[in-house]
Amino acid sequence: MTVNEIPKIVLHLHLDGSIDVDDAYKWVKEDGIDLTKKEMLKKMQVDGQCHSLNDYLEKFNLACKLLQTCARLEETSYHLFKKLAKMNVVYAEVRFAPNKHLEKGLNLDDAVISVINGMNRASVETSIMGGIILSLMRGDSDKDNLNVIKIAKKYLGKGVVALDLAGAEALYPTKDYTSLFRYAKSLGIPFTIHAGEAAGVESIKAALDMGTKRIGHGVKIIEDKSLQQKLIDGDVLLEVCVTSNYQTEAIKGKHPIEALYKNGIKINISTDNDTVSNININKEYINILNRTNLNENDLIKCNKNSIPFIFAKDAIKEKLWQMYEKED
Image (cartoon, rainbow, N blue to C red; front, side):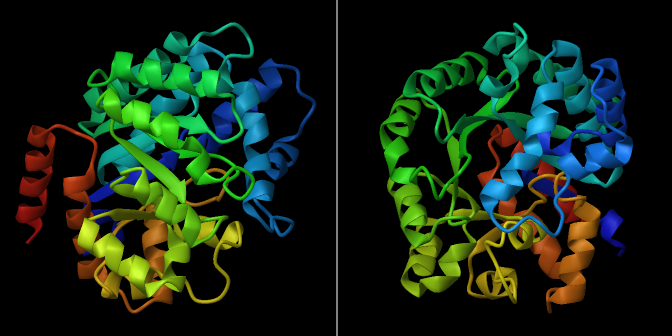
């Protein structure tokens, strides 16, 4: 079986970090931004000067500047889901921070509906299934983040499937957002939280205390065996993005994905940001196969293990189970 033939579930992917390069360059020209395509890519993709999550996050600035209209948000969502479908991704959850796209007059409804519409267009054309996760941002005001929670509730089950906490983890501790996620939980909104990437195991502990069943990255957990066991006992999934972890220097040396998987932790393999990291899900799978002792069956198992954790209705989970049963 080739990598492309493996049916894939992608659960950790940022919209603005995965903007189509040709679309971006077209919009750069439309907006009169004086950049060559090479100069644009330098601003949008990591290079040897990236040494931290904060450096990595700077690569989002241009994409966010470009994605300030309904048409562009919809087109970016549409092209991303279409690309994923070509790589045999059967289910994907794409996340974005709607507050980042209001600089030219859009409101939260505009931004969210546009991204949902792009996903739905791609789904009609390709049969890919998926949902949209709305990100609260570390460093944003409680008022702004509360507005995202409220808009998530409004569109929950109508394209939006969950909330996320993203941003500069080392600067803004996870525990500081406990009350916001307590409120989200009271509204019945599921969530995932970035933790254990730029900050250590305390961030993961805080995320678990908040009740999350999914953790974005979480790779620093390799430093704490007792916390690994807590993840196993609590049936929590890690959304692991190997290439991105190296670029942010969350990991130096051997990546812990193989050790964590063999220790019994459930893992979803994702890419984080296709454009920023200059990666795609097929390349990520190939990298893992080449650099670890994991094989194709292990990667398939990671996908199967992800099914109970997707933010979707049971009917979609059952459809995914049937897809993987056909592969057995």
